[in-house]
Amino acid sequence: MRISRKSKENLKAAGFIVTLFAIWEVACVVFEISPIVLPRPSAIFSTLFVQMPALWPHIVQTLVTTMIGFLLGTVIGLALGAFVGISRTAYNVAYPLLVGFSSIPKVAVVPIFVLWFGSGTVPAVLTALTTCIFPIVVNVATGLATTEPEMEDVLKALGASRLQVLWNVGLPRAMPYFFASLKVAITLAFVGTVLSETVAANRGIGTVMMMATSSFDVPLAFAGLFALAILGIALYAVFAVIEQRVCGWANRKQEFALN
Image (tube, rainbow, N blue to C red):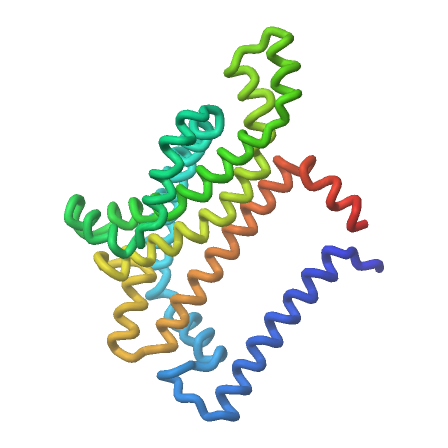
């Protein structure tokens, strides 16, 4: 049976990851690295498996909080990106403000959210939202700004309104940029959620990791990191599949060249 190019690439990637973990395991044994400094992968996976019943509510809490912040950030980012992308005035006014806000470390914003809304889920949702919104705005605005003016001129000559031009040309043209931003934004949303959980929350993976490090349970802290990585990879893969379904036309030329 012939193996496709994509399957070969996936097998190579899986082999590289397994090799990396094997090197990590052997290095910890050969150099006698203390588990407090760097636990072995076998110990981390064992802790993740054994502690899963206790970790599961925290994983669900982090996932739900992240998805709420991400969905709100997607809606707001799409609206802001469309507004900035179609209006030169909005671009000149809003873009510097967005860049300035994105440059602020989110760890400095979390205490303000806690002061306003108290500790718990709301600050984590807002931190995830503010962390993931910037790449969505930038990519949507870029996609709209790079729309071919000839296509807009043709539709305007046929009597199309500005809204019709945006719906029929601008938004489809921006879709590849939009889905590319979603794959970046979902990982940033996890960063924002965990950051808030480490500062002001009593549930979530971030809280578990803070408690684990305070009690020197380093394998449990790394197990939390692995759980976050697995969630991030899974959601990244989901959006990659959706992108392929919705924007397959944008990748058709590249796939033809590879084959």
